[in-house]
Image 1: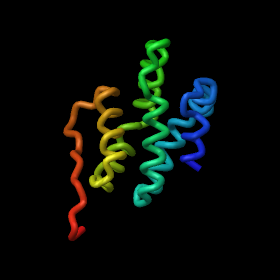
Image 2: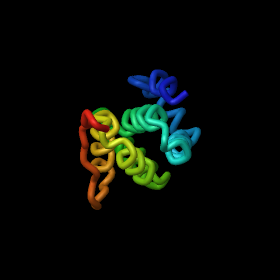
Image 3: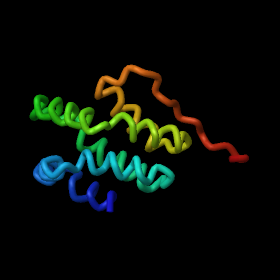
Image 4: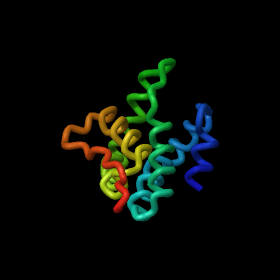
Length: 119
């Protein structure tokens, strides 16, 4: 379901706006928190959030508003949980790091830990 949201919202500003209006940021954060053992839920949820929070050069004020909404929705907790649970996932780690930095997170950010042959 989360990947479907990504497909519907990627490069579709109206769909993004509607998802945000309907509380999509909070819902996705909740889904990641509740299913944090699923790499697919984490990766797809992080991808949707990343897309929603991307810089919009045509409307920087809107980008700032969306990022504030994401912080208020508790964005940092599920992003950090996904990064802690799946440190070998380059996608989760890269998008998670970018979102944390873009939303003013100031604590330690987890780092990518490539999988080893024994893990």
